[in-house]
Length: 308
Image 1 (tube, rainbow, N blue to C red):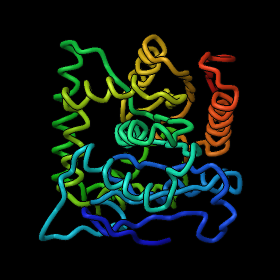
Image 2 (cartoon, rainbow, N blue to C red; image 1 turned 135 degrees about the vertical axis):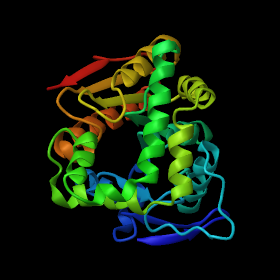
Image 3 (cartoon, rainbow, N blue to C red; image 1 turned 90 degrees about the vertical axis):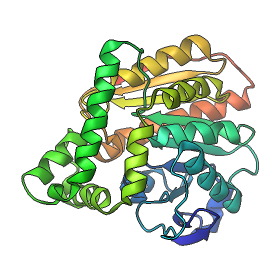
């Protein structure tokens, strides 16, 4: 566990190579967090990926242990979050050679997409988890307006989620399957303690039409294999959006795209079924490794995997 100072914040991060330098020779996996949550929720997954991968997590500005100056808050935008993550990637040398996997969850999928384009020469694969796209129509507009109102309410009264039964309801909205009291407490604690300006900004730009259009365009431009992954019982973000993202990239992108659907899980598959989520990640990483070793730009095997 360390800190890295950049022009936005003093960033808290963990790197499994700190305690095991031999991991620096292994492929690296950078995990990008979702909205208003620290990097602590990746820990069970990292335990499953060690020692085959060098795993790096970090707290984005406004969350967890990362410290921002109260007198000079940075801009809370996709570009800003991607910039601070890119600085960490370069600081750790994760961009030296093609051995970088990037995994982005929820809003972190947008940041991961920007990082994937920025480090295209170093990238082995991208994984976008629960961060989809939707057809623009009247129903979508109403849905976005509802989400905007829900964000405002959540931010103005977020301390109420520390008290039962609202605490349990908050957790159940994020996770359909059981994640245990420890990580339930972490989810609520991170949300209620995150920087209000950062959390509000992220909530709003995540449903901004122009931001979503740019996100769609950039996902199609990723040149490495992409895994779209979603829990089909997700009550936080409609899972159909991730399926649409897969279908759109499958039709229009030059590099392979694969879809994993966890039919009975929600927004947090890395906690709801860590074992099987880790297994699917490893399969994707192996697929990407073969993609570059064989210098093949054709899909192999099945494209869609449904995990019951």
